[in-house]
Amino acid sequence: MSHLFPALVGGSVAERPAVRFGDRSLSYGELADAAGALAERLGGAGRVAVWATPSLETAVGVVGALLAGVPAVPLNPKSGEGELGHILSDSRPSVVLTSAAAELPAGLRELERIDVEVRPRGGGVEVRPARSGSPAVQEFPEDSAALVVYTSGTTGPPKGAVIPRRAIAATLDALADAWQWTGDDVLVHGLPLFHVHGLILGVLGPLRRGGSLRHLGRFSAEGVARELNDGATMLFGVPTMYHRLAEALDEDVELAKALGRARLLVSGSAALPVHDHRRITAATGRRVIERYGMTETLMNTSVRVDGEPRPGTVGVPLPGVDLRLVEEDGSTIAAYDTDGAPTGATDDDRVGEIQVRGPNLFTEYLNRPDATAAAFTEDGWFRTGDMATLDADGYVRIVGRKATDLIKSGGYKIGAGEIENALLEHPAVREAAVTGEPDDDLGERIVAWVVPVSTPAPAALGPELSDHVARRLAPHKRPRVVHFLDALPRNDMGKILKRALRNSND
Image (cartoon, rainbow, N blue to C red; front, side, top):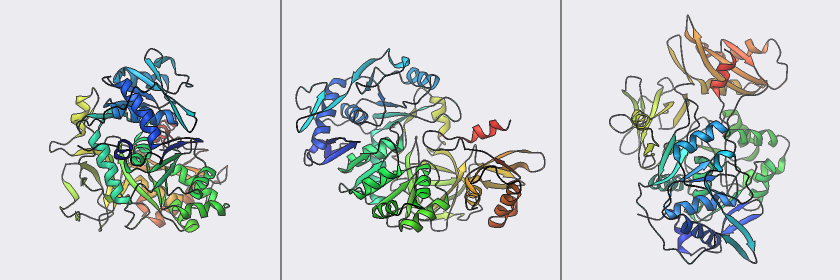
């Protein structure tokens, strides 16, 4: 068993910058002191909640819990009363870790509170609770729980996915292989820290490599440019962030130069529209790499840094991850052989559900053995619920969620994603989402939800967009209905809430 953070406990890079939030930062030595002091306090505790604001205290809290071998439950500070209450009653943390300045909601005030204080003191930091000596470096079983991360709850109350230590290590090491990620890299992002993307990839990732994180606090094009001009090498973001960068590039030559200096631009948590890929590449000369993962699986696939960054795809399976596409009856449409080469149907017309297995998987849904059992096939494959096709050279092309993005119309299986990309290529469209709704003749008809560039939308724009899709894709993929909106509903990670769209039409 190897330690999750060799650079943190080894002491060889003690003076190297580890994490920075705004103008507050910790070196590896200072982070080791702060997290080590907290680990002493937490030793033997049950699960601990972490009030996951974008701050040094959150980073210290999570790392301290991991050093103590105590599962951490990151909490979204924007959670509503009902959602927060459900998570707390389900996970039953013994304490909550937070900054001293945080005003916690009523639901958390019944828990023991530990204020993680990290303040400048001379040339170093003052850490509270105080440290009583160097803690022994401990190793814990690789299948022991490291985090309990709650799903977004789009199909019911959020479920707590229990993430073991081996899943974190396996995913981060696989990404290091795919992205040539080293201790020399400096990552910049402005992602929230209560989920896989911002916390595991964005905070724990640099620490496992011995590199550095610079968190923007709040995402902005100006902040991205500043950090990339000051030596940052990697940028993580969600499609909403890259869309804003693409919009700003039209008039900001300096931003284009800054993005061009990045070694790696990575987008995740949802599909990045093809037209934003093209705009960024045209302005900067850099291509955005996409990867694919879930709360339950961490990362499954990625475009490799030494591969072809192909817009509209999420690359190939990461080392150690088995992946296959499965028909509704359970038969395999396509998979990969032992050498990683694609086999079976590799074309755009054979859509199947992605199923995966490997060391990157969660162990269970907390307190939900029924949901855990239902999530896996009898032979141990995890049912992702995501639908995809497989290109001839093995690139995975996701077309959407089985529950919300797979439209069965006129005998065809149609992925919403390709229609959305086609709509976004029209100059009058700013944002687009596609759903299906019941139709007596077709089974389901395709419905487009569009935020136009100019409002109100011209009366002829709806039919024009339907014809545009029919010309670019195929007649049976054209939207039968087009709704125009001022904005699309999104969650904190920038994902479009399609159930909210459907409900608005009821």
